[in-house]
Image (cartoon, rainbow, N blue to C red; front, side, top):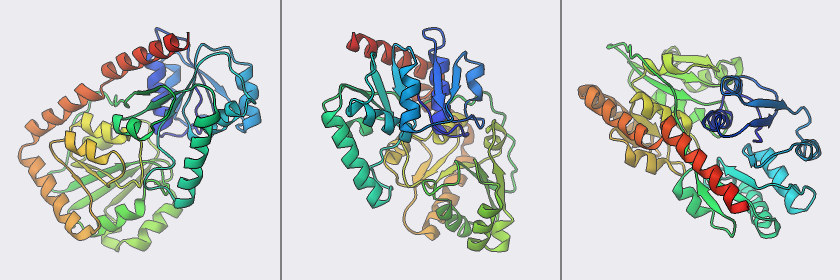
Length: 352
């Protein structure tokens, strides 16, 4: 499996979950940049980690050519793009099937216009001139949007938080948001929304960069002192459960996503979800009994969020159970493992 940066983020988490799901059926090796915590779980699920210091096209292809595999599975966007382009140009000629997981469509809504144009053009060219590749989407909607001549499949993400013991403060309400500091996650929008929320509301921010001085300065420039004092800047965490345990709802203001694992973890935790209208957000909201999509004005959105949390607190046990039942049906580790094993078997048979 080909990853990229080893931060505590979605793609490394997905790769580790795959390694765990396939641990009794395959020997899994992950090739990626250095590990910054994102690939720690590989040790417990028997996966090998090959750290590649030269993550250029030449370095990646040189390493792949030395690798004996029955399946090469590309994940992280930029290494995957380099490998697919090299294969399309016949600079890399693997003797095994190649699969490509689309974690976030670079030509989709939310990306900068120029990046969308370049990404769409590159993808069309690779699909047109490249040899057979197996395209794996995270959702059925994404699969339909990626229509092409190559075999396509769906493997939804997984949430595997494990046991979580709730201990919220009855006198305050707490939103939690997970994700690295980046244009994609649009924390500035989260701050503008938080500024409009009542003064009993708190915001917990977890993810790489959320504890940096630069990020705190950006928050201070957008928030009043009172609002700023109600924000908890956590930074990267290896175990999100203690923070989920004291939350009243999960917030995600992303410009684009594939299928956000943090949101699926909120399902597992039985929490309400509040999402920006990225591709795929409506499908998540439709499955959730206590959720909302953000609009374009933070003031009415703030009122809707307050009402949502009050509704949840009034019937928390029943709503929590309902939310968790949706997670068990769609995104539990057992469902994910069965789907991952079936997918790998299908690809190998198709390529035989």
